[in-house]
Image 1 (cartoon, helix red, strand yellow):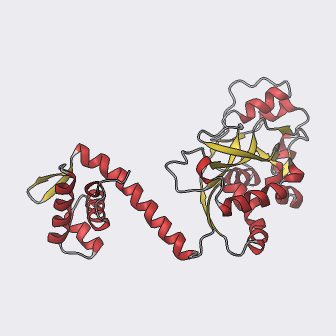
Image 2 (cartoon, rainbow, N blue to C red):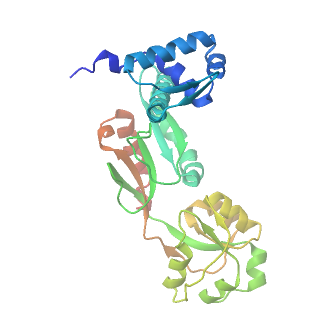
Image 3 (cartoon, rainbow, N blue to C red):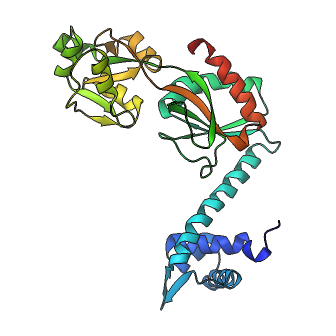
Length: 298
């Protein structure tokens, strides 16, 4: 059923309202949109008349969102952002073939990015846009076609394909290893332990796996593996790092294994996508290529 036109305001009215709601000022909105103040005021009033809802409280020379206006502004802002993103994607690739992919930062920069030229060479009509996301999100609220996911084999509202498992190793600088002279898993607790905010219980799991008491484990927190690895290189402590993401540092000697006691993570890496994008041609091509690239690691 077609939506009544009064519920589909023009972009000019919505843009004026969004700018005024974000800046809290008709003057600032007019400056941003290269319009006069009176033009912005007229557009906002036209929008209110069309919707039959008051969006702003007007107090002398100031404006303030009503409760309804505040809710509407948030939803409109997201809709305008999606339209803008779609327009940018179309301009970048007018023949279609754009894939918007959410990636985990370290996996994306260390593993995926060096391999992407090979995929793009095989699929010259496809453009890939990358955005970083550290945690799960709702595909309905994000303008992405797929995401690289580390965790359990589940994504609400999406499908998953297994990419690879992961082995983590306790890694540190050579100086720190020589200073503490680790011999057993219990010795690790003598050194500062570096933690990842997205895996707060990783050290507890590792200690328990090697029959070491895992209570009261403290240390510095990091939001990305890359920064945790740099902290370990600087001698700030021991970090549990995915072996395949720090191969270069281990090979060069910047990092060493504090102990040769790896642990296979209970979670794994997956490609996730919303059900309604399953037949998107660029996603199909990327999924088939990515599964072939990771076949040896599964």
